[in-house]
Every structure is written in C-alpha cells, then in structure tokens.
Amino acid sequence: MYIPPAGVLFRLENKNSKKVLYSSSTAKPPVFHAPKEPIQDNQWFYLIQGTGNRAGKYVIKGKESDQVLFSRQHAEPWVGHTGGNGSYDDNWHSFEPGEGDHVGWFRILTATPKGTFMMVSRNHAEPYVTNYTNNIIKYEDQHFKFVLEEFVAEDSSLVWDFKSAKIVSTERKSVGDMEVKNNTDSEQSYTFNVTEEVSTQGKAELTDASPLLQNGMKIMSELPTISSTNLAQVSSNNEKVQWTLGSQSLSNKLQTTERQFYVDAKSSARASATVAVMTVEVPFSMKAKGKRSSTSVTTKGIWRGTISGHDVQFEVKKL
Image 1: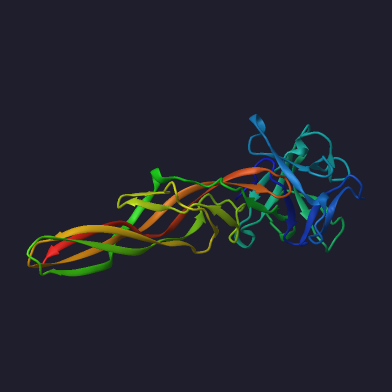
Image 2: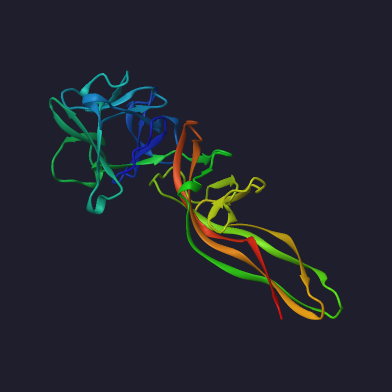
C-alpha cells in the first residue's frame, strides 16, 4: 500500500459512494462528502506522520480548512474536524489495506479509549458520512483510496546511476566494408570513411511503486550512451531530448568516423568496420513536483533499452 509522503496533497474517494470527503471552513456540515467533479479546494488533504507511540498512525489535515479529521463515538458529530495537529487520540488514524475485492483500497481505522472506529461514506442511509465500531465484516462503504494531485517532472532532475547499470548483452554490427587493389610498385595510403547511426532507444519504468509519476509524463534529459563495450554513460556532449515515461524513446544522429590504412605494392586488402550494439538496464532517480502543493519528491526507476553505433572498430585484411 502506498501512503503519500508529507506535503503531498490527495483526495479521499470512497468505493461505495463514489464521492470524496471534504473539510471546509465555510460549508455546512463542515465535514461531509461531495461528488468528485468539479474538484473543490476543500477536498484536498495532507498527512502528518506519527512518531514514538504514534508511529504508523497519521493525522489527516484539510488544506483549505487547516483542520484535522476526527472519528469518535462519545460525542456528535462522530466524524468531523478540529484544530491543531493531532492533540487527541481520535485525530490519529491508520490505514488497513483492502483484501479480496477491496485490493487497492483501504479502511481508515481510528483507535480511541472508547474503541476502534472505521470511517464510512455511503449514499443509501443516513448519516451518509459516519463511522462504525470496527468488526470483521468489511463492506464497500468502509473503503477509501488516495486520489493524488498531479505531478510534473522537475527539469534537469534526472540522475543516471551508472555504477549500478547492467549490460545485458553485447554484439557487433557491420556498418561497412571497402576493398582496394594497389597496382602500383609502392605502398599506398587509403582512407575509409564510415557513416553510422548512433542511436539510443528504450523505455523507462518506475521501480519504487510510487504512483506520483504516471505514464505519459514528459521528461527532458540526456539518454544513456556508450563510451566502450563495458561501460554505459552519458557523454559530456550528449544532447537533451524530451521523452515520455512508459513509452519508447529514441535519440539518434549520424556520425562519421575516418580510418587511414596502407596496402602493399601489387596487393589487395579489405577494410571492414563494426559498431557495438548493447542491451542495457540503467537505474535512475528523479524529482517531481506537485502542481497544487509544489511539494518535491524523489522517485526511482530503471531504463531498459538498446544503444548502438558507438565503439567503432576497424579491421584490415590482406587479400
């Protein structure tokens, strides 16, 4: 189960009601649920993480109201909000991951001296937003999920971890050959020009189970290149390109390499050239920023792809 880091804004959607909770400084009642659309400022919350004897528990604080949610049964309302950052036991909640048909959702449990209660959002019976005493029967109206704010990649934040990079396979590809015949009585010099396509193509995927970065996010960075057959690295003059998380990315350009060789008098030779083609896996880390909160978070992933056109090797054979 993914729990948003501190500062990240989210909405709390219920599986049964299809509505989201709100905490308002002006609406009546101040804590209730509302349709997901249109999105309202009072629907956004963030977490305060507990420490010490409250480790593993969280305060759910409204961004607009600046109030924290409580869940109790010793006084009405049973579910509401209050000031502060968690002064009372009924301000602190834990998230129980859903099971079976409820995988991907969670229950909000609140342990108090009067018992443990679970929040509920429903459309079929009043009160529509309330709580139950915790029991083993788990209904849809007890289950919520985090609907996170949208995140965008921070420019120039991507860092490739080449120390942990893996070269899965390496092969060589022919990029040209040249046969010459020297009919003179002296050694002659010849020039072999090879123009090859230097390309990097592959796809990046997240590895830390963070939903903050979504497929389709645009990222501007350099792509991995090859300096030799046993090292993947970003070259100092590699240009930045825009690529899309979760989709195939491609960077290519033509490069000409020149080699001079000599052929003995009254003899022939063939010059050939090959380039390295590598299948690589390169871990990376990058930062993204919430559009609403401006909270910056770091997430990790791995780029899998093919890099070719580097490490040109020439060979000259006498015929």
